Image (cartoon, rainbow, N blue to C red; front, side):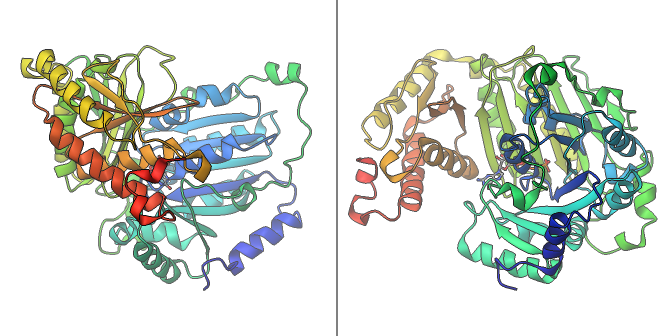
Length: 514
Ligand SMILES: Nc1nc2c(ncn2[C@@H]2O[C@H](COP(=O)(O)OP(=O)(O)OP(=O)(O)O)[C@@H](O)[C@H]2O)c(=O)[nH]1
């Protein structure tokens, strides 16, 4: 099948939508995809561009905490009148479709909001086919099933049963993260998708930025907006607190400021029995619901950034069985900043600050993997970083190293003027090139991903409407020259990739002369 050709299934969906064959029922887009492939990124893209559409959102989380709502900033989104989110935590909705998931669907149908469509983000470990019957029963029309795939890591995860299942029942595949993958990886991924999906439509994407009418039913997009007074009077009708909780195992470690919950889909969870009984799941490899574990780390005491980068991250990197980590982190060395931490795909790591704290600062990090003892090791390491030993607190030496790095970076014209305003954090960034349409955020974001993937130093990013800055924290044991070499080489790689249309003799220093 040609990459951009309409598949039969996808054409049928589009035809049904245009001919109103949904019978006037609320249309639903089901978003699936393996852990970290970009489902929440797609949701955010849809919500940011939804215009007048009233969208109900159901987010199903495998882990025992509602981290996706934190990452989606659902309180802000909910304050808009045309959206309601429900988070289903503590398990796969597909394993318990008759419980909270079914209740939540019924509430959406019964609500007075007259939603135009429903978006369901399933957990990265959910089977899409399990949802279909429930949707039909409550009178919701399944318009489209989308699977988001990480182009860079598909060849590694495709052996997992659940990934194959997610590709069997799909109308549209978003082959995402094409900015990270090589052309060879993209074309290999397309071959795999052709083999596994048969006739689904495959669309390449970066950060899931695709036209909205490809992914949701936009036939009602021109619906009349409610007058403003009416908008303000509509309260969010749905709240995950109101949902019955699924059962999960809870282990409490010694440190009382820190709590851990773990879900080990073993015999105490209804998911397993329903799953084991399913003959389809008896294949080889990792099968759904049997081996995946999650651990949730929560702390009201800030973590030491020095220890996080020198102890926690190496432990995460050395783990072959950690598949996903995400959450909010509060660092002692940068208390005013709320970092969103993401670990996904082939050890891609991001720590980006977005909006300021709107609640009491705390950390909440979910780890998902296939070996609970490795997850617990990382958990213990995280707990230790709430109380760092003295060596990490040697401010004098750290400041000296930060100044040396500052001097080195100041001499390189590809970078903006750095700052020592939060010493021993050095704040810097690659210059954008507005004339060529290349933003600071693209270059600095790509630089952060390259450096963090190598794992020798750890960059965090702070963003505002105008600026995208990187931060490098120095402790008493960092080597500023080595850190600079890492950053310099990564900057050359990023600039030559993103600015490759420019004269090669100028691609290093002059890439940003406007
Ligand atoms: N470079 C790059 N990063 C991406 C892209 N799409 C998503 N990401 C990043 O990948 C990470 C995971 O994305 P999410 O949207 O949270 O993935 P998810 O599928 O919702 O994850 P789970 O719900 O935990 O399974 C985040 O750091 C995203 O910013 C992309 O196209 N390119």
